[in-house]
Amino acid sequence: MAKLTGKLSRRDMDDPKAPRRPAHEVLGVFGGGSPYGSTRYKARRLCPFEDGLITVAKLRPTRTHEALDVGWIAHAGWEAYYRVIQTYQKTFNGIPKKKSARAEFLWGALPEAERAAVAVVEAFRTEKNYGYTYETAAAIILQYVDRYRREDWWEVVACEETIVYEEELPEPMRLYNADGSIAVEQTHWRYSARLDILVIDHAPGRYGLYDVECKTTKMITEDLIHGYMQDMQVLGQQWLIENCLDLSELPPFKGVLVNIASKHKIARFERVHCFGNPGHLAAWENSTRTWAFANAVLGELNYPKSLGSCAGALRGYSKCAFFDLCSAYPERTIDDFKTTPPPLGFYRDEQKEQTSDCDSNQD
Ligand code: SF4
Image 1 (cartoon, helix red, strand yellow):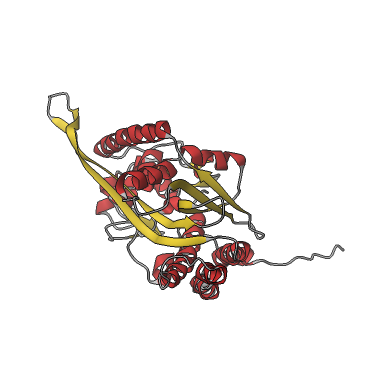
Image 2 (tube, helix red, strand yellow; image 1 turned 90 degrees about the vertical axis):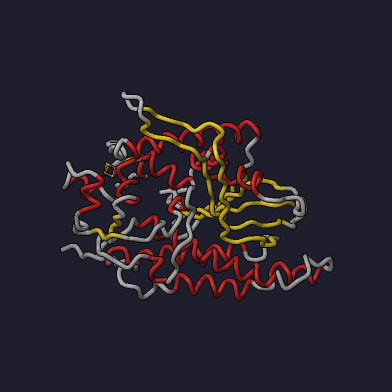
């Protein structure tokens, strides 16, 4: 008789559908997020109905998508790490000229920063139903700090700062009903981004200001890397920095550095440097202004379902978090969901804004 052997991993012991506390509740971190950022734009155009369930009916699954939680926890770890470094570097009067003092400025806070990052992920070690998520997020953070220890010559200028641009349109954009009345009127255009880290890179040959955007992903592929060159979030951050920040006292702005970590047991790390030319930025602005109006129209049209975005490639070969809901109640509208108690497996979150920038995740 064949002898069965094998080793159970945390993934096998976890029930992937079991409810658990939201990650932000575990850490006691509320608020944040970017109110008019690419996440909101992309969510509405991927499936207006899904966006309506989140923003109007305010429904949330009791078990959030694994990829979102791993990304959120890794981001919280990165934030803790870079905040410690920023606070330490502020105690100096700029970067010292002397070599030994410069090393102290760049890397003197690393032990404390690493402890802070690890403490964030460790908060999930004993949290119920977070076994596999904890293992994945911990692997990313532990290997990240190890991989880049004493490699980055970064002065941390800002950490988790939100930039909001708001403009009153010279001519409102309008959609009219058949009887000539106004169906949709847009008088302002708004766009925002929450920057993970803004750094001055002091490494020889790389001197300049960089916006570092941290990402977690299932796989690092060529398509993923190339995609960032034309990504709404990445180009939008460059546009906001160039148009809203006073850069006169800072080194030359060199663009966005997409700082990617894979979720493998042995994590892969990649940094992609993106710097859109004026044509790219004009294309971004034109399309984003148009999408702002198109998204308002989709809301007015009662958040149509985007059937075809529910599962598969568009979902990173996964399923929409509301898949079971749409399947069980195919005729309910957003208003129906808003005025009835949350169905089994969902709860209502009355917070005004989402608590995390879900765009941090690639799968
Ligand atoms: S299941 Fe499909 S239709 Fe329903 S919210 Fe998700 S993407 Fe939209």
